[in-house]
Length: 101
Image (tube, rainbow, N blue to C red; front, side, top):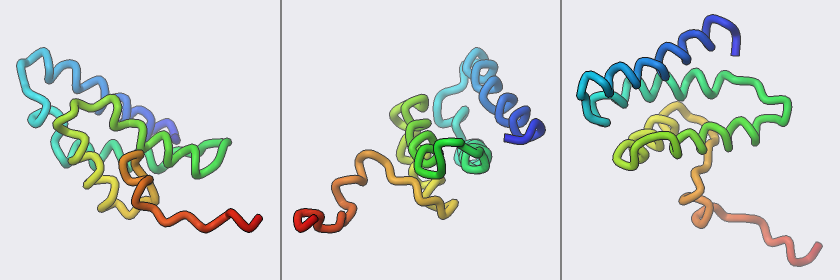
């Protein structure tokens, strides 16, 4: 990420600790707007391994969120129009028939 976006992402992530110490719950800390900002920043990152690695990284971010906020993360990422496929969605993806190869 460019320096300015990286600093913004760090401020968002480090802000979670302070808000938790204030006694706020997950739904108050990980608001939809905050998750949207984080997803937008993560999707801007460049991976030398390519776009698929980036999308897997964005999908994997859900593991750092409280369970109750994971559906919100999915919805936010989906609304951003990214091609992220979350592990639970893999079963519904139509894969090509490769048996004849």
